[in-house]
Length: 116
Image (cartoon, rainbow, N blue to C red; front, side):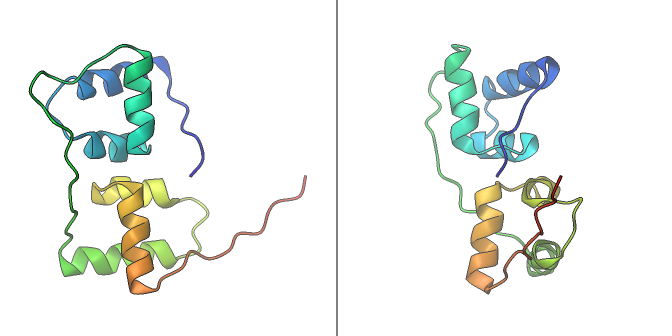
């Protein structure tokens, strides 16, 4: 996944969300980032989660119709929609999208590197 560059407003939104009870995985999916990247941003900004919240791992379950749509989107050769866009559309982390696709045997089409 390419490194996500947040502008100042996005960073403020991310840090504000991090200070709520919203799951970090949900915040990561919204910003097209990995959970570890969200936590790293928060640590660098010295922002903490609300007291009493413990990190939890969420097992993502999509209804079958959404899972089919996700697998179709993942297997498409779409230069506009990347994996983080798919994750955001379904409200799940990028890692969950990749795990669903692996489990179903669906692979991303290879993209030709553009020569400049």
